[in-house]
Picture (cartoon, rainbow, N blue to C red):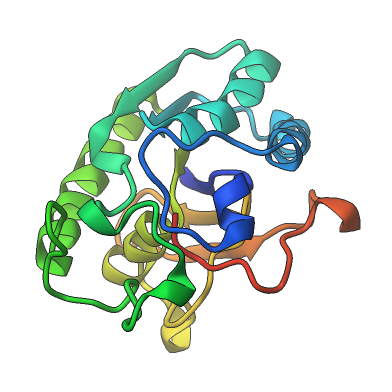
Amino acid sequence: MKLLLIRHGETPLNIARVLQPAATPLSERGHAQAAALATRLTSYELAGIVSSDLPRALQTAHPLAQATGLQIQTTALLQERNFGDLRGRAYDSLDLDPMQMHEAPPGGESMPEFERRVAAAFAQVLALQADLGGPLAVVSHGLVVRALLMRHARAADDQAMGIRMHNCSLSIMSATAPYRIELLDCTAHLAADLREPARSLSGG
């Protein structure tokens, strides 16, 4: 059985290179990306959909739910790392790389706190997939998908190390140990005009 790990579609703040507040929605192109992903995944005979409860992830999951007739289950465990008071700030205005910082920003999560939450999310997702008995779509955020792959999947030659997750990309891993990566950061379902601009970052 498989876990289909999906990063949400594009948002206006992805393009503006801004750390995103929780309520950030998809852009028009992000909605189109989500529709294209739903078309691709209709052949996977999904057993369920679980999503971060943040709007940009839920809006990515909705076309998939409509295409499959499945209900979306949500969990706060799949939310993006909380950057606290840095949210709403442009990357270029910071004197550090927020994606690499280990300490907690004011009002936010440290890297160890984030990784513990992702580990709890992974356990929850595995339990849900086992209960459903079929492929599970997991809609989340760039840093969460990357952490799931790097910390919990068996990656040949560290293939997930340093990978940047593109908007609305699909990664697939087995849902049973040793949790092998079968597909990584694939955007084959996106037409050229729906693909992510080069300056957009992997977080969010």
